[in-house]
Image (cartoon, rainbow, N blue to C red; front, side, top):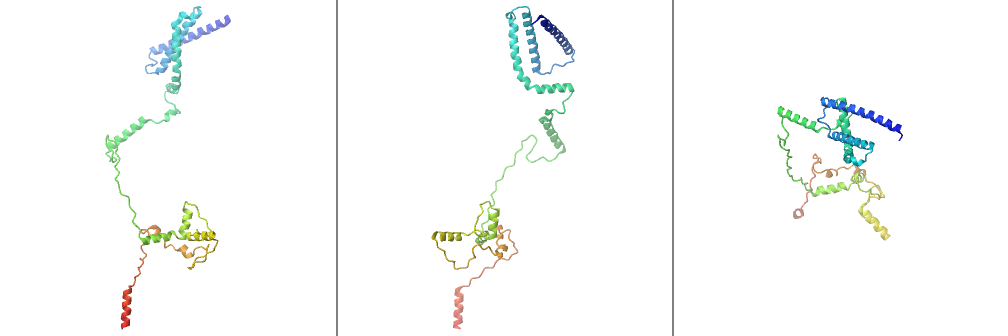
Length: 292
């Protein structure tokens, strides 16, 4: 380093030192005069300022010893304090990063005199305000004398009501006639179409528009396995593939059986039971007529 550069650095250092000293004297005067309140400050900033001040003092001692041509061993205490202060400053760095936002917010509030409108933390919930509102509502209810909710009392915990066990409603047993009517309704063509359209099961495919019965399937399998065509049954059957008559489509008499006895039309007259004639009386009448 040239002598001119060293002289320039010393002049700059002297000017900066004078400026720092003047600023320090002004701060000290304001603190002593009570213009700056330092009682309730951030302890982290205070520790950091004290550590930096001690670090600069020890560093100045080392520079003076080096300028005089002395060895660093003569300033051993200052060197140890420098190492300790450096470790403290390194440990304070992550804490400063965590408190950076809060410190900047406090500084902005102190400079502007209030919290900014765009502060994200101004929109966070305040549980303390909610608790105060609940207390005010309780006081208003107490003054108004309104009825309280069941299970709530002053200073007591809410106790839910006990569940009363009840027996499930058992379905009424169906008679044989109702069971026959239900089976007859379920076997109708319209019900089968509704089951295919609304049901979740796979759709049955057949030759005709309606699914084939079990008897027809068994008959077809027998004919295919035996290679023999069976004759037509004695009773007349509907031709294969033929759809139902219009009477079967428009006949809704079996549907009330699916709805239950309660939904049936009560205006319909009940069916009359057929009377069975006794054979003994008929024979007796025949004998009397022959004797007469």
